[in-house]
Length: 321
Image 1: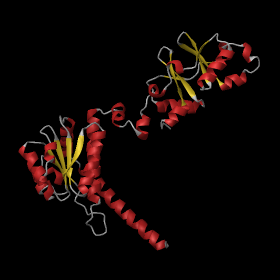
Image 2 (image 1 turned 90 degrees about the vertical axis):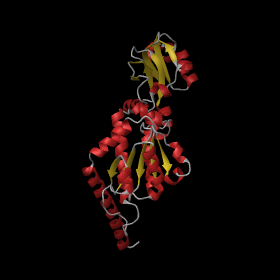
Image 3 (image 1 turned 120 degrees about the horizontal axis):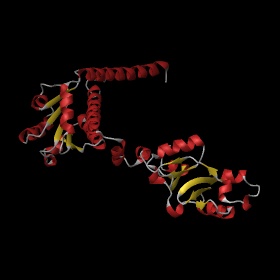
Image 4 (image 1 turned 120 degrees about the vertical axis):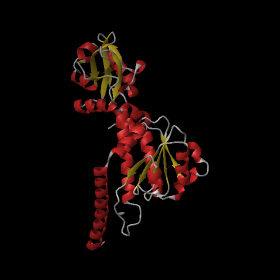
């Protein structure tokens, strides 16, 4: 590519981003009481949030419904045309509808508008035209900024869809805050993938019971080696009763090779090893292991009793980095 072609492409990209950024800034500055009213309705919702749109607004609506659903507000998307052919039955009087239309005159929305008015279902409009058919019949109007689309001919939905999506995010986050939606509840809706891994607890991954390489302080080192070999963890956990008193690693074995087989576990163990509690996040355990340059941590309760063991390898395999 010539330098002129490269420069033209970069200029076009910057123009779009600057245009849309200005629209978002203006919308943020103009956000008012209507937004707070919408948040109030959505926070106290007994049923579900129903998001309705057509065309590009429909694509935005699907994303909006997914964002609300994942942050504690039951929601789903209803296609405006399908609503007229039976899907209106998905909307109940306990629900609230958000209808999206840049012009506010999308004729496919007319049946949904009429249905919400007939059954007194709260309806929030997101539109650039507050005085449109949609805007004039809505309970609350969240107005998009009246600015040009960012495309070269000023017609393709670009600025308007970006603004609609951002406004949906703003609503979802504001409702999320009002509800006190915390990381534990977030994990309930995001158990898979990297997000889910970040909220795993140590108790979810730790080894317990017969899988633990537990030995008493007076255990001969020959038996300790057998226990370490049998579990394959490269570590032995030294206990007195159930209380952790030390740990033996491969490094401890190398440092005590002279007369090793004549000793007992208490003679070789490293005292006061770093530990973690079962309800800690796995990401915290990984941070401790990386900081101490160890591959495993003993898991203990508040009294110092051994509950389990967690290994760095298993944390990484679960997707926690």
